[in-house]
Length: 431
Ligand code: PMP
Image (cartoon, rainbow, N blue to C red; front, side):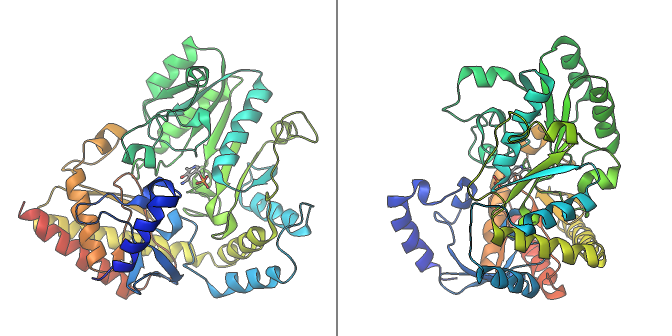
């Protein structure tokens, strides 16, 4: 496969952009490729690079593209909005429409604020939780990722795990001290910490972690987390930036029937355009300026183009519940077939999945914790990534991310993915 144009662009990119990329995981960690593929365009389930190679896209912009790239109705909605101007710095009726639509799907959200990214939404959620409780510290879980604000970059997942520095430099000791990190899934540790530490403002959690690879959370664990926090003056924050509108219209909280105090959203609520949002109980959200004194703002918050794409995407999902059946069934079938291939080739691989998300780990045993994920074989994952790319499929370049199945992935795409998997397993079986 000829990717010379990507290589040339990367050489230039490195001179003007740190690492040649605007977000670290885009840099690709692989055995064969020392440079990322530069994408020219996307259409449906496919991406096309600067050399016009076609790929089945299993990244889906890390989640938002549940309907695939440039889904005609979403594109039409955006085009209609573009005609009217792109940013006013003043409120628009559509922001209210999107807020109402989100509320109709997430009963735990009584009021919602829009942002431009998931990072900002998570950062503001923590701030408002501190104001509501009058306390300082936060509890987060190792390997969960909530964007790149200072207090949430301690023992974080996603690109931080990929590049083997779970904490970022440039964060003050005070901030690190105020962030308590605990192992995900270990209820006893949480209980002990809550008993000994009384200055906790919030517990923030990805209910289905997808930034240390996908981890299949046990519902009972989340129920226990909810119960213990209910008894204290602590805000429970579900980060559903990935899972919101992806695993169901009402996210993980709808599926498990577990109601957080605040929810963070992003990705799908902007239909592939820049957006984030956070919302929850009225008494917490009404602490935000201009009603209260917790400052949150943004020139592009609730940008009309993102909002139009979000409204159209969510409306399509709401009016067509069979979309969730379709993507979940497709994922289940794919995972079953991958498992058959794993058996056939007797390779050390295992798949975690939830709804339309999955991660393949190269390990013999099921991956249940961050430690398990870190102990999986990274070299085999690189062979997998390279083999898939050579066979026209883009999968996450890191073992710490999830694959995303969209409504427009076809049977033919699924066959292609399985062929790529088979070729990968053939190579790994010979190792
Ligand atoms: N929370 C979670 C669970 C995420 O996966 C991400 C990004 N992938 C974020 C927050 C941050 O969102 P953004 O990249 O839009 O800032």
